[in-house]
Amino acid sequence: MMQALSDQPLFAALQYARNQDEQAGRAIIERFQTRQPAFAQTLFSVFPSTMVDLDQAMAHLFMDLCFDVIAVYEHAFGKVPDQRIVGNRWFEERAEHLDQEMKLAAKTPADAIDQDRQTDLVNFLHAAIDQQPCRSTDAVRLAKTMIFTTVQLIDVLYDAANSKPDQAIH
Image (cartoon, rainbow, N blue to C red):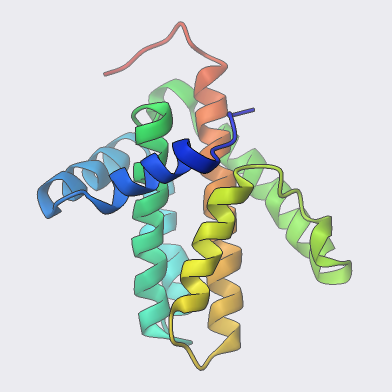
């Protein structure tokens, strides 16, 4: 499991993400789209499209926060792993697992979800969502669920790549 980011390492990674100029930010996104095309499509098209009808500003904030997550992981753990190394099975397995957790969470207390991955980062992102003016509690809840899911999936992606350290694609 990836090392949890907290305190100074988390602050430094968030500062790195927030200090990227447009050109550097675009390079980070393009690298992510090239190395993880299916995942990028999910984060930047599928997830926001489910939210845009509830609150367009929240959908835009979600995409901004996804960038922050990608940049935080690049800063803390290196460039995003290439799908040619990790394949897509990690994504399918974790998405199925998270789907089961979300269904269980709908029937049980909120702390039943496996939140042991990057709790401080998730809490920071949830606070950013809370600060966004929004009249739709459904949009807020959906944004928090999707950003939680995003962090969990990216964490598993880096775990999957680290379990195959002898393969490198640059």
